[in-house]
Image (cartoon, rainbow, N blue to C red; front, side, top):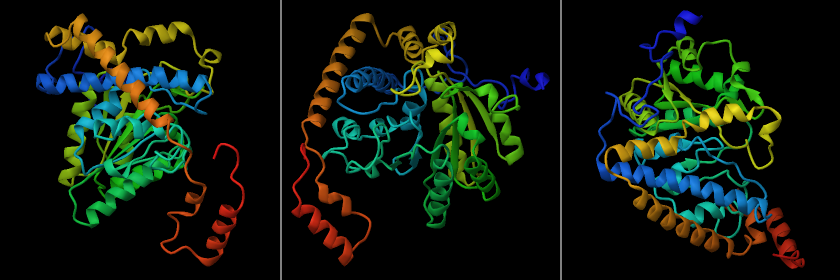
Length: 370
């Protein structure tokens, strides 16, 4: 269907942009004030620096796993600014940092990579599977796709309770081939669930290219069959993602139902610390996308408006580097989570047989390191 791809005026087949590659803005600019733009930039810079440091920490054997965000910073940061505090976010592997934008403490955030006593999840999740009830963000489960029906269900529950809150589900291009995602989209469209469905098309589902996932011309065009609007947005343009999420959230909040967003982006790093992307993609491909780096692109936009300089950037990097180092040191100094926490949070009143097991555990010598 090449004729459809050429219809750049159609939101399902074109590409919503605010910033050109050189940082110049278009008519779609949301007109955010300078202070807000600098906050957005600070969050993007912090996430990039945090990624670099945490990957080193993993290579040093201090944590077991890390999922790098590099190249995909725009969507999680934009989500933190576009949504309201009472809205819920159901993330995939690379959207955890929306929690930081919404006020989750950095040290408590990185503690989830250690699973120690500072971790609000009590060490029950893998590293990079962030969550925080305080900011209405739900951990993903590593199984691909189940967060999408969870988000739709949460959205329906909020509507039944008379709330104006909406849910946002992030998922990758690979997840669009999962039955859970199809079921969720069908249900969401049929019942006009107040939910935004954001596909992060980073071109690789680990080693499977996005072109192998669908015969449709774009992932956004699948919205036609589900009976909902679809919007294809430049996922390396933080302001474009902000506009798309803001408008889709407003539509859901009005009661007009879901929107399918396709954020066209690129995973510049490995899928995770366990992956070697050189086995399945070329350095030339990575270099091409590096020229569209979302952090550098936004910096060019801000420089064009006189909001950043080389000196201010250098000072910001120094400030953020110190902040990240302090947060990691704070997280790492906490001891392991108490063994008895394994019995918490399942039953309101602990059954007798689990109480016996807990007592037996506490009577036994603790393993070395606990």
